[in-house]
Image 1 (cartoon, one colour):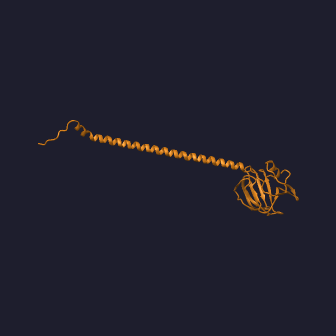
Image 2 (cartoon, helix red, strand yellow; image 1 turned 45 degrees about the horizontal axis):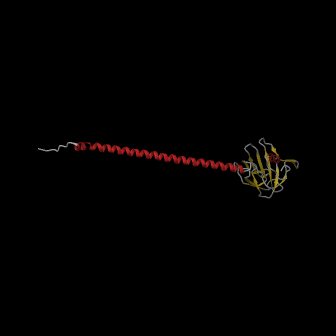
Image 3 (cartoon, one colour; image 1 turned 90 degrees about the vertical axis):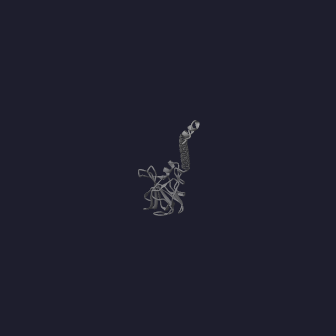
Length: 211
């Protein structure tokens, strides 16, 4: 006859519930791990958002600084500049039976010539009578003409600013000596006297009665 132990009392209860306790503990452990994972993901997203915000703020500050520097540079630059240093040797008007459509500024070959205004180079190269020339168009359609130059330092399509060196003075074409011949063509195509044009814009012309 086989004798089986009879488990009664508290011990029997503990043994019968042990698998359930382990199962509950496993569920709690998995839930805790899930909470940790979600918390880690939230922290990672928060850190990523903070880094993105820092980058955006740095970019904003950089843009503002660049804009400030650009404004300061623009304020320092002249709105207009006289095209070259030298002696005014000829003005606008009738001369030798023809019309002289600009002013002549004499100096040595190689003297820097600067753009009078901001604008775009529309011609740079050979020109009948001028030897070599540069023509620069302003935003309003006014064109500045620089003739008898020795060397052009700009190309067609190039944007230039007032005071920027664009060429050197020469003696090419129909010229009696080294000089710059400068003309102003209004938007309607009329060639106007550069001296009062400069004077009206606050730019003195050395050697002229308005300068």
